[in-house]
Length: 204
Image (cartoon, rainbow, N blue to C red; front, side):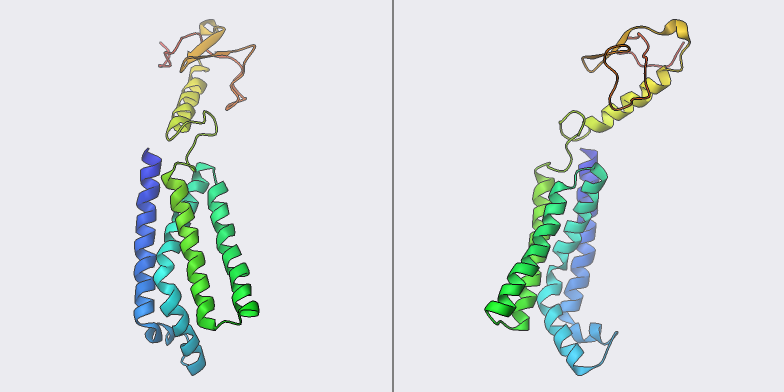
């Protein structure tokens, strides 16, 4: 739960920053472009682009922040699909607009804006439906992987106990881990475990 809250907070900050930048660029395109070039054609085409695309930078910032959050969770299938969708929209619809419909450059800019909306929306959908924060170990939602990792770290500590404190198994979250039958897959370096039931406290 905490990880998702942090992800949403970071995404909101990113969306706010990129949204403000995009809004300023769309409202004052000439001033923005004059920082780089004063050539008339560059300013004209650049202004047409910023007016149509820059207001949707908020979706790019939102989608990128959620993409990196999902990457940290180790589940990037949906964010990757969002990136593919964005690229596909530009390639397919852009190609159709230019080569088949013989549309204007302004229309191509609207296609690019649409791709940004799709990118951000797909990432938001995946995060909102918890498709990017499921635990690869237990298959449950937020926190289960973190809790299991903490348990395993404590197990590593318990393995430093004297040999006369060792037993056959330990019970963890209702599951028994046997030293000679069922190794802990998440930590293959642990070959034996103390016989302390679910008590994982420090040694006496």
